[in-house]
Length: 258
Length: 278
Image 1: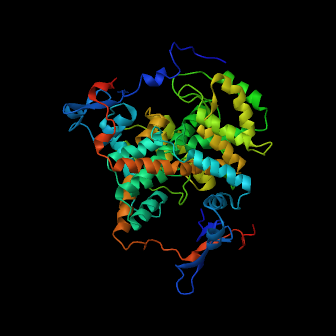
Image 2 (image 1 turned 180 degrees about the vertical axis):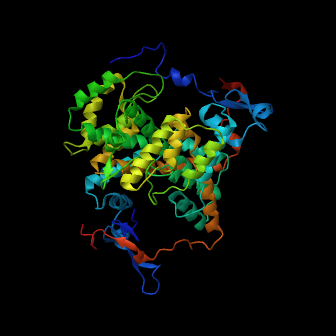
Image 3 (image 1 turned 180 degrees about the horizontal axis):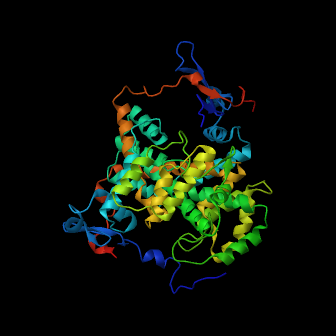
């Protein structure tokens, strides 16, 4: 194999200062001067630019911002927050807490890997009739104890509809001018399946939003981790200020070796 | 819709039954008494009687294997623990020593990097075992090695066969010592390893690339009743020790002195300079 001598990127340009080639005097993000962005654009606009290469339209900003707020704090019951909190209460290094939580936020059930699979599922089917697809998957599902999916990103949450994910999807639908987008397709997919309590999950609505923003599946998995990061960080750090006894520890009586 | 009707009073009974309780088929600790792993008392049966690698395999598979099999795996861990920071997982560890992250963060970050679709032999071990077990089945059904290779994906007219190419160099120096060790420990060459050697010879003659350590380990695992998933579970941190060495190498040097990059060492191929016009 032949390896390149240099890194290659379409994202970032650093213009070296005249005195020192290691010190940039200016930087450009997809062609835009960072200081011009800093003066004229919001954080949401710039993160969109970073991920997609162009500044967003008003609707794109709306979609990304709403999703960022919706995912901002998964809450202390969420496994990713719990992973960070467990490391926090047991006094792992503060710099370890966020990465620990982010790894847990990468799982195939409720994490970034599920978002990627949900995006692939939506790409595969979005040219088909959503009601027929829903019917097909409903006929295939074997209801089981535990978390059940009819497809990646769509299913039951603790045995019921995920009310918050459903509410968020409805909010987006009410403000969605895109006629043929992924959110709309999945809305019809869910209309049918929700009669059986299989509905939008957080990973599914994230996948549909990412696709309507033209984000690709691999990028979607990591972006999901990024968007849940603030809540992981806050909850994990909160626990570092408490004694180790401030979180439950299962007693010997409640621990069974099978 | 096909459903298994469950006699449950509420949709969340399953979770209510598990609140505040744990049960494990793997083992557990009774404070001040003992710890068990898969039915074995760690303090009374295992400590002092088995090797660390036997314990690793027990925790990963539930099986207490013979010491010679654990010794074989230990040698694999040595083969993938190189203190050379050009290797991608080690490079991550070196960067983290360079920036004074902790040794634990550096080592596990390197182990994470090695969970690669391309190298490292932990994630790829799933595909490696599947390839050689499928290949043996197809040979038994009458196909030739050429047929099997031709079924693989190709890139630049070269077959992409998990376990039989390397990103850097076609000759894997780890195979011969591992072959010697395998014989010395008394393992016989099984049908998967025989076929792996034949595939290696075919690929070497035709493309100049032979078996790599992943292909060797996958064939050995298949011959010794170790499932692909078990192999994956045994070796998540197989590269960790080499990563630690690379972390410590840069930790001992000036911060930010590891492979410094000038601004113009980056090849920018993106949009031309532009201004915000809205």
